Length: 282
Image (cartoon, rainbow, N blue to C red; front, side):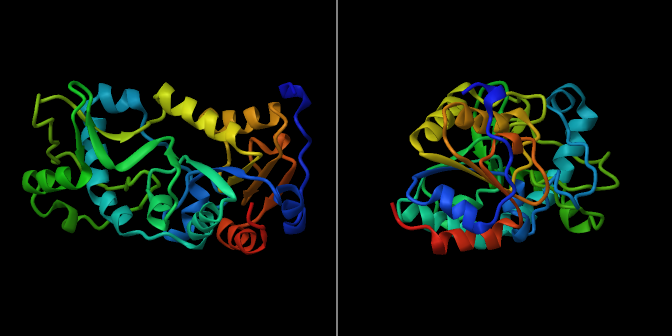
């Protein structure tokens, strides 16, 4: 099936989704909309305020951007670290345990799928709990870096009140010019969250594993993603081109709706819970 042959969008009901997915083993692709009920807002939902995420080029090329990012992240990270899985995460984990889901690709970096019990997860855009040196490749935990940043910036996180949490453990703060950034303890290089930034490519090996996960399923279920960026949309397009049914559950239209067999404009927590209760084991 070519891209131009993609199945036309069909706005449907839960019964339509069950009709399409029943008896199939599913690959799943999730986005920020799955985590909103855990208190992590998304960037592109219909009610989301406009945001301009920092790019990879800004982070690596300008010390002011980098300092501002780490100051925001130092506060926002604490919030994400406290979040817990919601009903949608738990429903997907239950479906995997019953053999309905073969694997899950998430565009989120919050690790809530793993916390809910999902075992076969590809963190497409990385993980918020790790930090990598861009020079020597050393990886440390975000918790270890938090300890170092606390020593370099005593009382900073507790003193900041103007905070808005964002999906990448980011937060918005008024004053960050005095924040001290930590360098790599091994080589003195630049530290960066182990997260794929805007303007940065997903590692090829990770992309290939995700394609293989889609190929291993009989159908693709998309939950809580607007599919605005190519990193997620390509898997929807791939599934449609290989003749697999695609179901999209999201609040608002998505860029991948034209490839979908059925779409539902609904919240993910309630819809995934209903699917978990209604879909038969495979």
